[in-house]
Image (cartoon, rainbow, N blue to C red):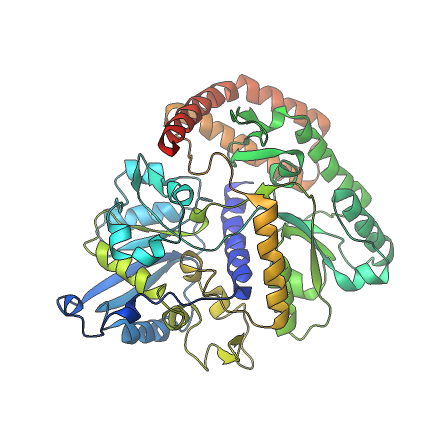
Amino acid sequence: MNKRILVAAVALVLVASVSVAVYFSFKSNDVFSQLDDEDTSQEALEETKLTFYFQGNEPGDTKEVLEQVEEKSKNRLKANLDFKFIQNSEDYLGEIRSIIASGQPCDAFFFSDYFPQGLRNLVREDVIKDITGLFPKYAPSYYKYFSSEELRTATVEGKIYAIPNHMPTAQTLSAIVRTDLMEKYGIPEIKNYEDFEVYLKAVKQNQPEVIPMTFYESVMGLFSWINGYVMLDYSQGLVYRQDDPGMKVIAWESTSEFKKGIETIRRWYKEGYLSNGSIRPIDEASISSGSFASFISTYDAEYQYNTMLKNRQIEWRYKAYPLSDKISLRNSPLNGAMLINSKSDNTERVLMFVEWLQSNQENYDSLMYGIKDKHYTLADNWLKLPDNVDAGELSLSWAWRWPFTNIDYERPDSKSAEDYKKAYIDLINTKTQYPRHLGFVADFSPVRDLVDFRRSAFFSMEQNIHAGYLTPEDIDTYIKDQKSEGIGTIIAEVQSQLDKWASENKSNDQ
């Protein structure tokens, strides 16, 4: 994917991650309820302002929602909240750096491991603060959610620098298909790409006004996991075998599955399952219009899409069929996280805010769902949106939700949501696992020039594949060029770092 595609993909993952969470039951974990509201340690706090930055557009009711949170939390936090938003930026972290360097107010900001620059870079640049001792001290109950394995993702050289979210998601790619068309053409259950093509063929032959499919994923994303590969670094096209305990680094284009995957996409174009320009971001219009008969997306998209259809009073529904029964990768807890500005004077108060938010259902609702009876209502503890409120426009897609999402507090909205919850949790527990390299981020600075060329070439290749005109000769040329332009040097550098990381973490685990 090119840089524009990568940023859009991050936004898509945001929607998927948030939508998954709507179905999960919640529990009370009220730490603050054990304390008296007039606790003297809180009286000693001076009032302060906390400034958070998020990627996305500012919701219209931000000020009103934050005023509610401030009122509810005043006895604990004595903090005024200022949420700022960076809209549609292809260099979000670059803008964050500029804000911090200029001395503008910024206490914490959104981060995702989908960004091409990892924690290590931000630590090296002294952009983010070490919270190793502060996290468990000022957000103790939230800290306990995370295993040592998960906290390792937030760690650089033994120090914690990130506040993860508590919303498990996975890279379980599925065929998201229209159930009415499955039934109409008697298509059996889909278990793999071959079964999926039976559905696509039926749509192509019988529904000429409908585009059979679209997707928004790279060749590596589509075909590496089902063939037993783990993606080590997306932008560099680096993988290793899932069954390889030594994690030998491989260039994706050097595998036989690389060419097979491209030939599969070429066949989809030839058969008319894809059309020029049909590979594009999956947005609300394409979902609800029915102009696409299917999507390749993550398993949780089923509920997201059906919620959208229900809110629009559209009768037909989608169903997700995983495209392989192989174990897929569970996403890092840094999929959506908060980092604290190294220059912030409010580190403890930021962590106290996180603890307050995650300490009980009422606190969580006040930020994550907004104002009761305006942004949401409850019916026997089921989440219900007020009449004429679109889930895609209000609380379920607010830009600040992702890094604060907690599976324990997300409210289900129906009995069908509970059923989906059970299936989703079962899939997470039985069909996903963290990769061996969880917490490892390569430092590419020793091979920066080679890496920049590699990234540009890799994204260009993906664009050509998506456009449908990459020939077998082009592929051979690409593979040859990558060998001559230093992919071997990049792999040797990454392998050395990975081996060292694995050795150190093995020692730490013993």
